[in-house]
Structure formats: C-alpha cells, structure tokens
Image 1 (cartoon, rainbow, N blue to C red):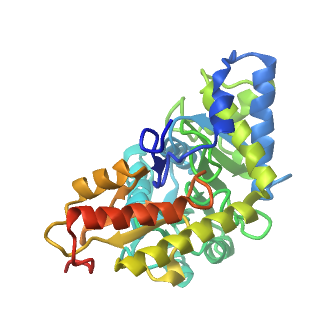
Image 2 (tube, one colour; image 1 turned 135 degrees about the horizontal axis):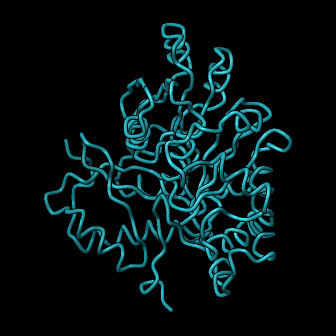
Image 3 (cartoon, rainbow, N blue to C red; image 1 turned 90 degrees about the horizontal axis):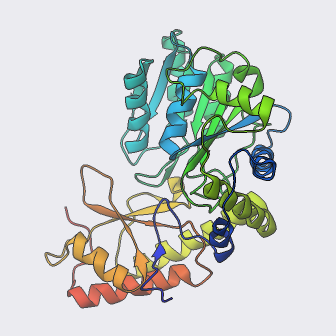
Length: 374
C-alpha cells in the first residue's frame, strides 16, 4: 500500500484514520447484542467527559452525518414556538439558518463578513433588542474559512439573557477546549469523523439533562427525535433503529487512542503544530492565508489561489493528489481559494510532506505568480 494509492486526507472530514481504528471495523456486531450495547454506553460516557459534562449533560448519538445531528439538536431542543438567533460568518452558519427554515423554527440572522469573528457584544445587543429570541445557535469553528468564534464569551452572554445555546462543535470537539463547567450550553454537537479521528457515519449531541427532560414533543421528525432516542437508550441500552455498528466500534477505538494521546490538550497541540507548519511552509512558497492568525483555528486553513493564469484548481488538486495528499476546494463566494486541513492521523512529517507536494506541484504546473488574484 503506497501513499499515492491511499493519499492522506487534508480535509475537514472525513479524515485519515489510524490502522487501529480501521482494524476495529473488521468485526461484525449484532445491533441488539449486549457486547455492542456496552460499546455504545462506553462511548456516551467518554464523550460527556471530554467536555466535563459529568452530572449535567447526556450524550445522545444519532446515525448519519454531522448535519443530521445539527438538525436533530435544533428540532429537539428548540420548541415549535421558539426563536433562534443564528450568527452567520460562513457556509455552515448559513446551513443552520436553512435547517431552521425547513423544519419550521423561527429564526433571525446576525450577519458578518466571512473573515470576521462573531462578537459577543453584538449578540448581547441583539438579545436586548429582541426579547422573543429563545436560543442562540453558534458554529464554533466555521470550516468554510477556518475561523474560530469565541464560544465562552457568547455562552456567558446567552446565559445572562436566559437564552439556550446550541453549539455546532463539529470541527472543534476533542481538539479545542469546550468546558461545560465554565460555559453554559444547552447542546453541543459533534461527529465521529472529525477531531476524534473516527470514521464518518455517526453524530452525537451532548444535551443538558435539565433541558432534555423538557423536550418531549418538540421534534419535527421521529428519526431525529433526540428525546425519544435518549429515553429508549436509557430503558434498553439499545439504539431505536439500526445503528452504524462498524462506525461505533471504530469510534470506540479512536477514543481509546485519543485518551492515550493525552485527550483534548494533546490533540489540540498536535493540530496547532500542524497548522503552524502548514502556514509557515505555505507562506515561504508565497501563498497568502485568507484569515489573520488571531482568528485562525488550528483545524483547516484557507489560502488565496495564485494569480498565475496557469493555475487551475482541478489540475492543482490532481497533481497534489498524485503526490499523496488530498486538498479541499474553497468555500468562499467572493474570492478563489482552496483549503488544507490540519486534522487527522498522518504523523509528525505529514504536514511538511504536504507542503513539499504543493511545492512540486507549483513547479510541475509552471506557476510563477503565487500571489493572490484580485
């Protein structure tokens, strides 16, 4: 097996996983089997501990991608007459607004430029101006750009106004500190195929128990009803509907490795080192990051595309892939960009290897002007 045949994923998820995680999927499991149910229970307990939510929060897993879990969280936690404030500084914030619209939850947006952090003082003003708002839905890291929003400050503002806070922590959970003891949060949403370095196919929502106990009848969908899922699991230890058994087993093993590494502090430090190597290496080649370092999360970095007329993303992507790395297209609407993820299991030399692959690609394509296009 060569790296060209199995390239390293420098994407916001799915990620490159370890051999141990892959091997955990070699066994088949019965969905009602007691051994499998013990795996589910163990995962739920461990995920609560990652955000220090023991005694206050319940972990409710759900089949599907992270977006499934985001929709389930909003539909379960926000009552039908609720009003959600959605700060928007990227594509995944926009997706939350679209979810609210589709499932029939009233919502308002607070709009920012894609390079600007959400500001707690803006949310404070909005909540004072509109007391009908019941919940704030925040994307912690907007992976359309890589920007990190100030969770702790926003959590305090929402709590001061008596609003529930729903956090899309899809690309931060496990890598960037989220402390339920310090930041009041009704729901925190994550997924198996992100910073925990499992495989995709399972989302999870960590919900404040006092909130979850009041959510019966809120959900717009049977399959997305996290209250019903929670009650059923509490009574039976089983999933309501067929679980993604191999994904669950892989996540159990991935969490074991996460704990062996040193948990969130160590995982975050590794990603931060990857990010620093990436930005420094790319700047040495002449590339310009879209974001300032002050707001850049160590998760994924957006770079402005070269101004050279020979640059075409599809060929650039393929040339880098031929050298063993898979990049990600840009998500911005105003300028041409591409993205490079800092997450995943690819070892200490992985990021430097990726920069070298990009350098070789520049030469192969004959790109002379690396500076960004207007």
